Length: 419
Image 1: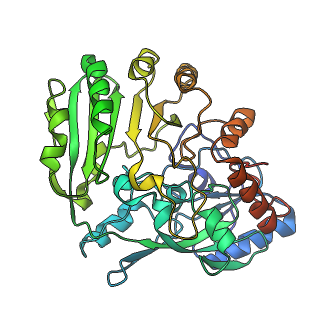
Image 2: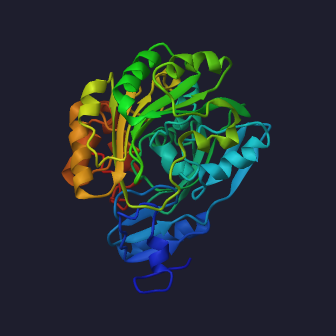
């Protein structure tokens, strides 16, 4: 086990994440390369009385790790595809692009999100709303098993049979209950999808948003979509409708949106799943960013656009429902907000005026459940959002499980779910 402290060569690089607006200043950093390193790091921290934070890779974490011991797992990036079983096993530092590329060689695809640079495990423990989620559910619904090192320094193999309470909590609970070192999940038989985007001029936002909401009310479950008002730096605003259709008849499905307003660009076509990063073209970063998201039963397009301040880079509505509304198998999991029909999210370059504008836009939605992979808050405001992120009985169960596996609160960084 290698240890870095402030001032050591490599400390600054090791503590740097995707979001340049968040600064991590731990007392000790352990760059883990194996589950054995993670075990040693946790035992070292508990012997020294240090709280533990975790940084894997991708777009997190969004909360600062100040003091304590930080375990980084970005070097644990192995991915194994079992084509016969249609599964992937990934280590803690794997990103979606690391899975999509080898899976596509077998005509398989994961329930990945819009960016191939997002970390697989961090995305999944928050539920994971993906490119085909209306057809197949949350990414957390497809997890078969995990390996996790808990506060007692034990490596546990967790599944629906072995430690089912922990298995339930880790899939959608978001709360840190240990360091997940690997995860095994289903792959889907999709070598190709019908996907891409429609780009409209920014001054047609109201027209497009209204047409989009009407359109989504009749979409089949095979179609997962979003609409966004985009303000790229140094360019005119545009509206983008993003589509991934995991079935036949894609051209017929998207016809109403092609007729909704004049189109600047149309990339909708049959595509290999390995090319689905082009649907959203998310920035590769790193960059100083801020975002928030809430879940909604319905959307008032006029109210959202009226509150969409010029400082906000992205204002997006995603269509949920379909398979996401159904519980996962017989054992279920901790994913919240299954009843939501849409999500509303905002993203901006991190600056006080943008954060104020984003919070104001969220107020349009009222006290709605948070999108737990996009909280964008700290302190008491974060606690308030977490209180409505899950049903009360789910919060109670999460808190009980956390106390059982981390009675001393060793993993006190991250999201504080409290009864």
